[in-house]
Image (tube, rainbow, N blue to C red; front, side, top):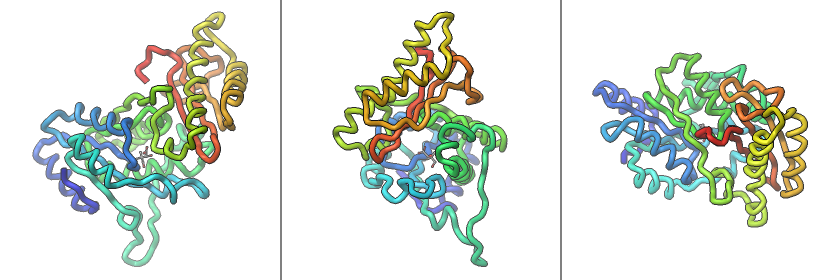
Length: 296
Ligand code: PAF
């Protein structure tokens, strides 16, 4: 496995691979890699085949964290991450730093170019974390230009993020195919996430409440008269279920169209549900299609 911190070395390597007709897949991550990330790497390998190149980037991107969020304490374990990438057959590990990703110009002007998606970012995570998606789209656009991939893989765990990146890729004409990979879950249903490390033992036991709420929503729409339930009725029921089974404060529960992210008026199996809640100091998110047959 090759490893570099240098943006220019990464870009030159990628351009050389492309000139030789080699396919490239990028898995952008913030590190502290778990099984969910490894599954993204497997999707990446499948997309380019044995002769292609899989690049994984590890970069805790400061611009996607709001004031008071967990940028400083975001979990990091670069040694373990390197071992995992090597074991997964990653060809190149890209480890940029803040000074090279967001440099000041030679005349001392601070970094000042950002990418903003204006439609899909207005609700859910975008409403709760107003500066988050601009940081994500900016860093992902930069990673795309530096690593020159044909494919890039994102987890359905951050479903809104995946759709925002698809939209940016299409609107800005990046010649890249975005692959959305299903969420990996612990045995009790908790979606895998680096932030699960923050959970205390009692909190960890309560954390599957979000997945249980999604399962209840699936049952409710399956058994509903005419196959529909009014949004407010279902939301109220699920908030009650979550707060009675866990010491959680629900941030939002939304039901929306999987393609457009537009909220639905009545919930049926064609809708998708997303939920965010605070459990102690930890903010958990989860989402899934309400059609249990959907791949994610
Ligand atoms: O999903 C993440 O880990 C991050 O948002 C990403 C896509 C690596 C951008 O920093």
